[in-house]
Length: 83
Image (cartoon, rainbow, N blue to C red; front, side):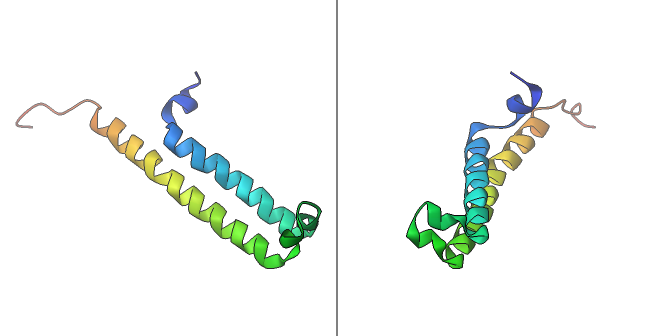
């Protein structure tokens, strides 16, 4: 396992992957290619909905990432008592 994958918890990886997929769907809708997938995706507001969802998913994935970083920092070397 790579060092980056060891530091990235699964609870953060899944929302980040979903955010990337939602961002790609938003780009498809903004370019106008969303209508090829479904008629409802031809509306530019569908792209905006995907973009907002991508941002929300990225924010959701950031929480476990920050918590894992704080846990690693707390598990590091502790100062001696009374220092």
